[in-house]
Image 1 (tube, rainbow over the protein chains, first blue to last red):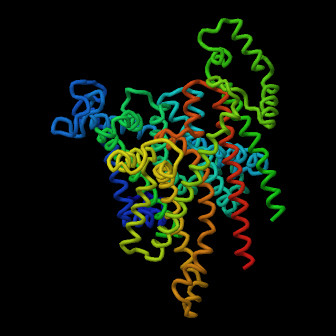
Image 2 (cartoon, each protein chain N blue to C red):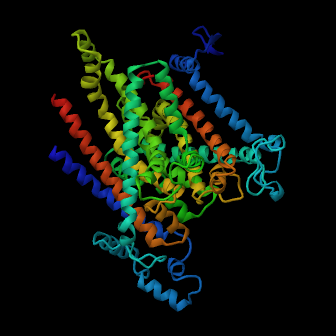
Image 3 (tube, chains in turn purple, cyan):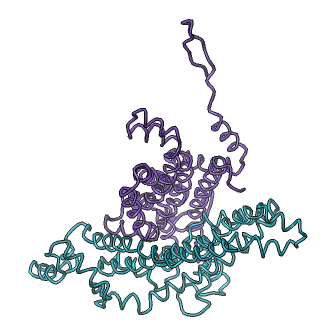
Length: 298
Length: 307
């Protein structure tokens, strides 16, 4: 890729733009990591399945058919049917939408709030830093799912409230990571130079600090999506998440539990779906961390 | 060490204030009138007003908060709407003990299997065993524990019939819930131990020990492992706190009458005093466990420094 550059003699010359060396090294390292590539493929497949679920799903995921309840896998119903005769494969495909949306949106929401708090805390320091870190300590004082349960018990069960509840726990996690990275970057000499040149705090934070602390944020976000999906499924399993008849994977596990002795497929396949998508995000997240951190052990 | 301990204790105070404030405000953020909800659907306006007066809900918010904290310090967390027993008795009569027992056994299992797996993996780097252990750890970490619990029930209780399906009381009842709870922790500890061991094994003093002719076993278990365990202690401590959260789901799967199941039943029944009380107890326990982990870490680290 090239861009025109003005020469001293007034002429424009096309100059080859090169990607910064560290990103080239990052892409090369990531491409060599087979586990990370496998994780990325798994995640990509699930995203495609979720997007095209209405076209791929062989049956209506919410249409009951009591005559066909608790059927084992067959050519008509590849993964069998549940206690209301609904096709499990179709429900898993549609359920992928809910799990991915909750996982990704809660991570983005938590990350945005966490990044803002972390950067402000790390950049300004003093009482601002103490106040924000104490708030984070309070949020982290609650075991993860307990905090999500408490929030859902106040707000009520719905997909939106599950996203908010799961995002709550992401905030202190991202805030601490971003604060640590901000403290490191803030001490660099070029930041002092930019300040001396009269740059505003807003410009320094958004143009010079944030771009340099993206790496740990991206890694943490990828890994957090995995745990967000599990937490959301757990909430639904406990009856506090996305309400039925929505085909949420945790709800499917909860509904199938009563039939495990004679229809184990009701719990087997939704569980495998959760496992695969979480493995995918964990593998990809581990790969990102190894590619971005030269000191991490393999 | 004493100064560090006192400083850490002082840092807990604002956290505890924040926790009590968060728990107190939680119940006031619930949509609707808490007095009406607690008085019941069929209550007339006079009864609702009486309930509001009894609960002190007409007082300013700050007065209500100070009264709540004052009562909590004296061991009064209110009365359960569902059972009419006081919250503290309901929590500490049996349930708290069961949950702590479950969390401790789960932690013990996760430490035992996690450490052994991590050490084997680190000492046989890139071998078939190493890859197998790390793949197993990845799956252990990624598996939802409630699904694992259902699978264990299916295989060991329903199919083989060697262990009970649900309940708590005998050592047989403890096995499946403890495995369910401890698997995720074992996976994290295995990965952490492997990573930490590999970092330590590459240090110069380990190379010196080998050069002096010290045996492999002695180098690993006397020199490398001791230093490799330092970051693992932090993870183990935090695992116990995480297991408190995991116990909520595990107790539901195995129908164990612990604190976790009490929280779920109370939320479903809109028993707000009980929900407040159980969340507060869990949070306080978590904060104290983290405090102990910090002190233990400092203690171990200081000893290594002195050595």
